[in-house]
Image (tube, rainbow over all chains, first blue to last red):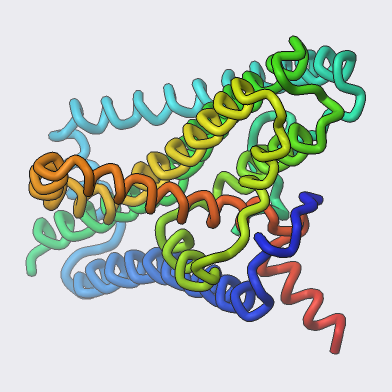
Length: 128
Length: 198
């Protein structure tokens, strides 16, 4: 735990507002996702009685992706590259951070740690 | 609306969802990683100063306090966003005592004190930079208003310096407050504590 003098610590009221903010941010984030799905559903629902859902997806949406093959391909390539890059980065951080910790501890036995995960990711309990 | 128009609408909604996911998911993690990488660089330099005995040692309370402050910033790097920054700036008292300043004063060697102060200022600058990088809204606003603000500020260099230090002081206070958050901080924890208190 990070020990700091009380002067820097926000008051209880400030912390309460801070938690309310986190809650609001979460509601807005997930609310946006729900809205996107809702409007997508309403768009498809308006087809009821005119087209079958399978025909809509196979003939129209897939056809649109095919006609935009260059952009679709580039986007897919970028996603695959980003995922691979992230995996390699985390593996490298994990491998090197342990050695650095050991070497630093030889010089400073009371070495304090940031407390993030060995991969460099945020601890789940620290996430907002 | 015919099927083709609906397909375009659905396609745009999928792309909008993808863009939102990208901005508020992987992009945020990337910015956090950039911030942490820069803070690690600063922490390493301070560690090297203490290891070489350049005006600082590992046993100095000032060293330990400064390291803990950087550790706190690294740990809670994902929390440095401009809405939180504004909220904290409003909630913290304007003359809130800053313990990091007293840590600087404890360093006896003037050269080391100056260097560490500069490194900590760099850390706060990185925090400000990543807060801007994080926010799509802020980036758009900055792109629109940036040129006008720059012209105005460059015409008055004294004002530029004044604004810079004022901003840096607020960031210092905010950073100290964020890094003082308890480890097991989080909404879920606070809720579970509240329910267990009942």
